[in-house]
Each structure stands twice: as C-alpha cells, then as structure tokens.
Amino acid sequence: MSMQAAQPRIRASFVPRYIYLMTLGMLLGVGGIHAGLIVGLTRWHVSELWMVHIVLAYWLLASLALTMLTRWQLTQYYERPVKQIAAAASQVAQGDFSVYLAPLHTPDRLDYVDVLIQDFNRMVESLGSIETLKTEFFSNVSHEIKTPLAVILSTAELLQKEDIPPARRQEYVQTIIDASKRLNTLISDILKLNKLEKQAICPQRETYDLCAQLCDCALPFESAWERKGIDFGADLEDSAPVSADRGLMDLVWTNLLSNAFKFTPEGGRVTLRQWTAEDGVHVSVTDSGCGMDEETQRHIFDKFYQGDTSHATEGNGLGLALVYRILNLMDAGIEVRSRPGEGSVFTVTLPAQGKEERA
Image (cartoon, rainbow, N blue to C red; front, top):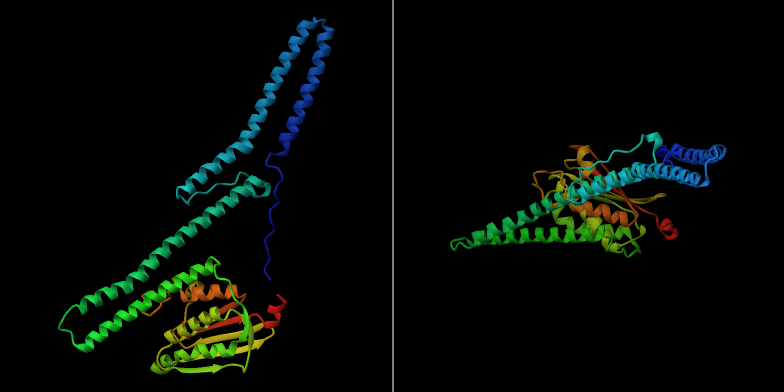
C-alpha cells in the first residue's frame, strides 16, 4: 500500500488577512476622525459653510487614500500574478516549453494563485514531454519507413539489369516482397495503435475458451520453432473461459509469441503456460533468449522502443505498445521478469470471469 504525502494547507483567499484588518481599521479610523472633526469644528464655532467644505475635503482625501489602497491590493495580489501567467502562456503558445513560474509564497502559505501556478508549471512540463515524444515519434516513423523503402528501391534497381540469373532474380523479388510486408505491417500497427490511444476501438467482449485461442495463436509459429530447432512446450488447462475481445487478444498472444521465437537463439526453449487462480486467469510466455536489463524493461512498452538499438532484428517497436494498450482496455495486467543472458517471462493476468460479470 502506497502512502500519500500530506497535502499542504491552502488558504481560501489569495489576499492576506492583515489587508482586511488594515482596511477595517482605516474605515473605523476615518469614521472616528470624521466624528472628531465635526465636534472640533462645532466647538471652534466654524460657520456651516466652511464646515461643509472642510468635511468634503476630508472625505475627498480619505476616498483617495482608500482608492489607492484598493488599487495596490488588486495590483499586488491579482493583476501582477495574472499578467505573469498570461505572459508565460504566450511563450508556451509560441513553442517555448522551458517556461517556469515561481510560486508567490512559501509552501506553508500557499493560496489558490500558487496552486494555479503549480498546475501551470505541470501543464508546461507535460506539453514539453508530449512535444519531445512527438518529435521522437516522427523521427522513428521516418526511420522505420525509410529502411524498407530503401531496400525496395535498391532491389528494384538491381532487377533492371538484364543479365540476372533466374535464381538471383527470384531472390530479389522475394526481398521486395519481404520489405513490402514489413512496411505494410508498420503502417497497420501505427493505425491500430492510433485507434487504441484515441479509444476509437470499442472492445467487443465475449465469453470464449482462452486455451483454444492460445493453441490457435501458437500453431502458426510451428515453422519458426522447427527452423531454429527451438524446444517449444505448452502447459494449458483443458478449458479456461474468459470474457474479452477475441480479436484484440489474438494480437496480444501473437505479439508475445512472436517476440519469444524471434529473440530465442537456435536450440533454445519457449514455453507457453496457462493457469487459473483466485485473482484471475494467467498466461505466461517464457523464452531462453538474450534477456533484458532494467533500463530496457522500463521502456519496452514505449512506442518504437527497441532494446536492440542496432535494429538488426525484425520489428518496429510497436508490438508491445499495442499489447500494453489492449490489456489496459481489457482491464488486464502484464508483468515482465528478465535478466540479461537468462531470457524473459511475460505474464498476462486477465480478470476472472465471475469478477468481470460482476463488474
């Protein structure tokens, strides 16, 4: 259980109490002086005409003083902070996300203007992060699209030569097909991820047998494990009913299995395991591949992040990002355990069917 830090006490008004007390004291003082002035002028037998003029002059001066005090209060506690925030907002609107506004008071004397400034600073920080992510996104998309396009272009230029042996020509054609498939997969994954993030995809939940789905998703990789001599094992229950979107969960299991076979070396082992517990239905995919360090594990669900910075392995860094967002839609969780050189274990937990129906 996490402990939340105590929230600082926030003053209900951004004008200090002593300002109200000062204003009240001035009004009482002005009223007292007015009464004393009338008594004094009466004792001095000042004519009524002069008395009226003196009293009016006194109230003119008192009104000017009160007006100046009110103006100072508005400028100090309202107009100046609003102008600072407006100027900072203008800088942000022009693309400067390095803006920072210092709080007006210390943490023990915060008011709602200070809270507004803190929220503004957090907003600017978030906008800066989004701008950075957007820049990285376009950079990664450009790189991932440019690579297969370069392969297609260079191979097509080689095909223009007339003295190419038939076998070599067929090889070039297959290279173009593979690069086109990679480009098609990239664009398809980007569109799916965009729809998931905008919540344009509404999950169509249905109750189905998870074990049968896992078998259907694993069978297409038979050629992959036979080609690399991988020892593939599956430990599944006879039946495990779950309530989820079958099509979206196909993407989850396909991506996890694809990564396992891709990063497991020849002669390695991949294990698909499923079991039911009180907290839900669990599925784990274990491989004996290269594993990941802690830094890689912190970023594997980020878009376009690839632990293999050389991009030597196939992939575009979107598979696990899709998995993560799909599982969020399904109210499911995923846990990763991995160590360099010792392989990785991805464990997905789906809500138990009874819990899902009650929800």
